[in-house]
Each structure stands twice: as structure tokens, then as C-alpha cells.
Amino acid sequence: MVKQIHVDTPGQGLHEVTEKIHSVVQGAGLKEGLCTLFLRHTSASLVIQENADPTAKRDLERWLNRLVPEGDPFYSHDAEGPDDMPSHLKAALTATCLSIPVADGKLALGTWQGIYLWEHRRRGSRRELVVHIGA
Amino acid sequence: MVKQIHVDTPGQGLHEVTEKIHSVVQGAGLKEGLCTLFLRHTSASLVIQENADPTAKRDLERWLNRLVPEGDPFYSHDAEGPDDMPSHLKAALTATCLSIPVADGKLALGTWQGIYLWEHRRRGSRRELVVHIGA
Amino acid sequence: MVKQIHVDTPGQGLHEVTEKIHSVVQGAGLKEGLCTLFLRHTSASLVIQENADPTAKRDLERWLNRLVPEGDPFYSHDAEGPDDMPSHLKAALTATCLSIPVADGKLALGTWQGIYLWEHRRRGSRRELVVHIGA
Image (tube, rainbow over all chains, first blue to last red; front, side, top):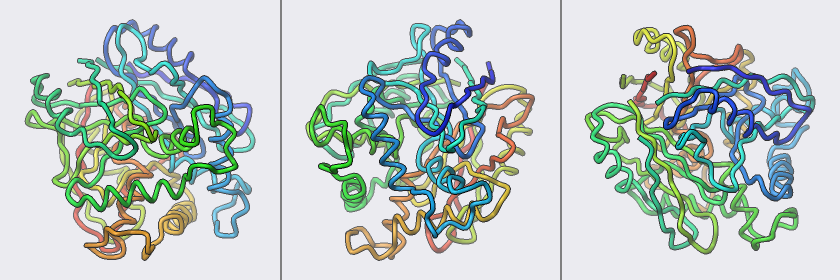
């Protein structure tokens, strides 16, 4: 099964999509298999991170912003603004796709794992996420 | 097929799991397909690296420790110690899941490729790895 | 279906393989499913990036070269030259495998997404890419 869903991001940062993906998996009615997420963008990415303490999420964002700062004179690609090239770099360093096994009809995530869409552009937008569920 | 296995890590670093995964693949008796590994943790990760020269493994660990050092005053998430936040950052920069084709009943790895569980916490622990094998 | 293809890289940098993969997908004749790419090397990697403006590609290469420079006195693994260890580090920070859903018989890539084989060695070589296509 292939299904495309939308995620509206309010702005830069980690936005949890675990529940949204859980719903798609439950809708598929599969007891055991593999769920693959694919993000159709190069200025946002996917990451599995701790869902318990919000400081982990915040440190993750701040650290990556420091590693890949806006306004680096090094960039020549800036047609869409100072957050343009850093977005592509952050996406390359994280993930565009994720595959998570399904067991007992549910995503086999660890207790502290959440699935996040990482928006790298300052201004959020409507992001397209393709979900594949197979045996 | 979905199967959960355990990997006991003695401490921080790259621990090879290639043989363990080979055994699961052989047990599944599939001639051709896809093997997906999913790690149920956010303070350890998966990586495919050179299995020949141990200096490659060592340089990889030391380099990432330098990029993401412990004790960075930048971190606010440190409830579990100085290796807490660096662990999450290292996991985000590497991989939580890997998919490897199976051909002739074996993982289609290159000659010099090994599969590693990268423990990012100083103190090793029992890690849960979910293996999905499908056609 | 598992198929191995070759990609001859002329040298260091991002080399687009989107059309090559499209051909394999079309040859498989599958309407809906999942296409997984696996690179059988640890000194090259895979990445999905913007295919429109070539400056994005160039900045990506230059930025990663700055993050992981050649000749860092830190490396002990240099048997194959100054680009040996940086290659492994760059591969660990990007991806060895990618999974892309197939819908309507085509890869469900976003409008601006291209699939790239990132050669990290100065001297290009013949790279082996395994493609798995399943339902």
C-alpha cells in the first residue's frame, strides 16, 4: 500500500508525526510487515528521536543550527534566502526515508522513540510524506 | 518475518553485528528479498563501515567524539550524564534503520562492508534490534 | 526483484543516478511498491538532493569537504591516501541505502528531488549498486 499524507509545519524545528503514521498503519490493517516513510522534499528531513524530554529536541535543533549556520559566506546557493542552503545540508546529514517494522499491528518503535519531521526552512509549509506499507 | 534480537554492547563504540544478522537471514530461508534492521533506541545507532582495517573504525569513533564532544556547555539535556545529549546527536547524524537486499540467500554486502551497532553511551547496555525480512 | 547495476564515477562529487534507477523500476513493471537502493561501498554514499540549481550540489560538496577535510593529523587510517579516511567519515554521515516508494509505476520523488551517488574518493571508480524492488 502506498499513501501520501500532508504535514503542515508551523516553522523550523522537529514536529512529531508518530500518531499520524500510527493511524495509517492501523488503517492498513496489517499485523506484521514494514512501514517506510519517504519525504518528498530536500529542505526538510525525517529523524527518530527521544519523545520524553523536550530539552533533547531543543538541543538537537540548536546544535544542528550551530553546525550549519545561516549566513555562512561559503554558500553560493541562496536564491530562496539565508535558510536555503543550510536546509539542504541539514537534510543531507539526517534522513529522507525511514523504515520501521510493524509487529502486532503496531510500529515496533522503542519506548522513548518518536518519529519527527524536521522542518529546516524558517517558514513552515505543507510537506508531502509518502507512506509505503508492505508485508 | 519480524524478529527481535538483543545485542549486548560492552561500552561506547562500533560493535559488529554482521554475523548475527546473517544468521537471522539464513534462518528465514529466503533466497531473494530485503532485510531491514531497526534499532529501538535514540542513544545508539546503525552504520555500515569498513570491516578490514580496525584503524578505520577507531578514527570514525574519535572523529565523531570530536564533532560532538561531551561537556559542551551548549547542552541543556543532561539528565543522564555528560554522554546523554551527545548520544542523541550522534544517533541523529548516523542511522536508526538500514535496508540490505538479500540475494542467493545472503546479505548483498560489499566485500569490505560490515554492519555495526554504534553504542553512544559510555556504559554499554542491552540493545533491542528488530529485523524485518520480506520478499 | 534484486538487480545489481554499475555506476562509473568520473571522480569526487555528486553523480545523478535518477534516470538509471527509473529504468530499473520501469523494467520491473511494478505499479505500486518500494524501491530500495543499497551501495556496496564504504567510501561512497547515496543522497537525495535538489536537482534544479547546480549551486546546491556544489555547496553540498564544498561544505562536507570543509567539515571532513583531507590531511587532518587526527586520522591514523590513511593506507589508501589522504582521501581514504575522509571518505569513510562522509559515508557514515550520509546514507548507504535509500528506500523510495513506487506509485503509478514511477518513483514517488518530489519535483525537485534527484537521487545521487556521492563519490568520496578523488579518483572515481566502478561502483556497485544493488536495487531491490518489492510489493
